[in-house]
Image 1 (cartoon, rainbow, N blue to C red):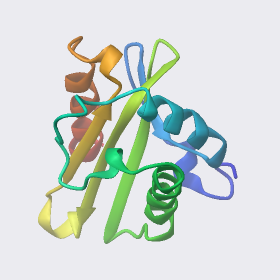
Image 2 (tube, helix red, strand yellow):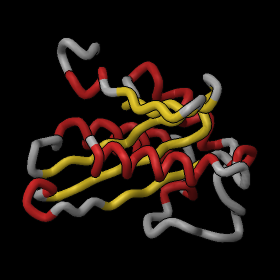
Image 3 (cartoon, rainbow, N blue to C red):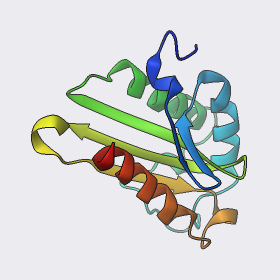
Length: 138
């Protein structure tokens, strides 16, 4: 599917060598493999939904359903944009921003994950800043 059919696929957010874009179906296997490399200490759960602890193939199925549902439910009043994040061309994680009635309330929520090997380098902060700048400045 391309941006002519689904315009959000044409959206790119760039900040230096960091790029965020919506994952297309061909990108999902790479994102799944990245997440399976490890996002957090397996003895801890930093997420409200324990999605990283699901066994295969439930993990993969839930992962693609999450991305598909964000597309299927996108409206001007309710949106969730799970951006895949690359730094220097290398995939590193996901930054999502979501809102209900943003035009009226001017409020968003965000969430993210970053592969453990790239944590502690300021990338997570840059991802969040880029998502917030997109939501509030553009």
